Image 1 (spheres, rainbow, N blue to C red):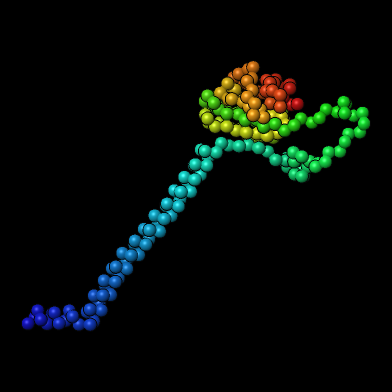
Image 2: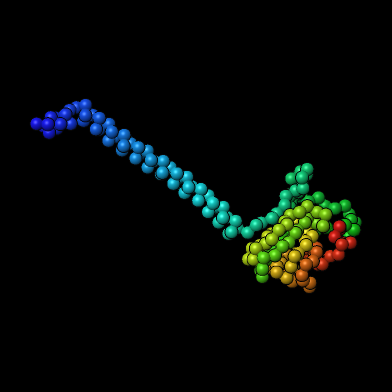
Length: 193
């Protein structure tokens, strides 16, 4: 008789509602935990993708160094074609004036080992365009009229000027001037030019 009374009591609407409420609460807590875990996994996945993209970009795209106009100059005046229609020089001045050197594209590739290089615009006192180690197989590129460079080990680099391979006649730790026609070793007196 007690069992029948307990069964009757267990099937009462209040106890049934309480059972459903407790079941939903336990189930809701599990869903809430699952939702929190899913959100956390989503955040971790996005962070890993972002890190992967950054690492991919730095490993597949060689550091490219180019320079714009010096600070405080009008960028319209420093374009490679400043005048769409060049003005003719006054008569008799063609031979006296030398044309300004054209912009050159220099590529330094660390072909044989990681190697350090410092590149400055124009001279040893010029603006620093690159200062660091170039990893083996990576390249740096600079564009301008003339560059001064200090190489930790020039022999580790393959050098091209305007796409043309250039083989310097010297090697090792050197200071060099890079122009459209050549790369030549410089001494401390000629670095300031």
